[in-house]
Image (cartoon, rainbow, N blue to C red; front, side):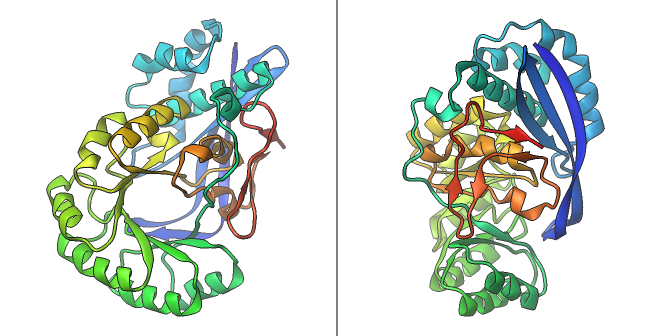
Length: 337
């Protein structure tokens, strides 16, 4: 098996602002695993909040090249376990390698990954479209210029609820709110009742990731369901989430790829948690991996390719209302440009 590393910069169509800051581009690493004339692809992007930079990922992947290229690929799950000890603290790189292995294995087998797992893409959740923090006029303009059935509204500014009230006047679409750790316990509980009146479906990660006591209070007193994002990075977090949240947002880069994501879904179902899969700023390479999980999800946020201007691949497609078309091609269904 051959390893090739490709670096690129994903350029956002417009500034992306959340409660932690604003950015206009993200560096990304594309991992390619090849056997003969077949190649599989996976993706990891930089992320300041998680302390991830592309130079470090490339150096780590390069150091693992002899180990990776020595492996005779039998299945992606065994390959993940084979590398796991060497990738502790490198979940973003682990994700890129694991997803590339799934893509390659599916191409060798001539089947989409979801079909190899016994899944069929029949009734699927629609993706939300992200409204980043901006002037309320620009946020309203985005709602008016799109036709999505679901919007994820990024909040975490002093006039949060005023923004939401204005947005609700301009759309009947489902609204979900993501505060990205910006609220206090008191704000969250108070806002939950306002959001409930406005028909918000759920709120995502209102408190700081380590505020478990605060989330228990929110869990008991809130008028809305809460979904863990920053507080749920991997399998070990699910038990804690079950006592403080109504659902979890699995991000493949946080947990280390499709292999652990499948285990997390099973654990979440056992704990009676709703399951969402979300994305970073990433291309169709990463989104096509998420698409394989759609039959197992309650909610999905996979609008990454819609936010960038230089997508390097074709694969899963998002239609105007948020419907996802999953390619029937082998592996992740990716074709590189």
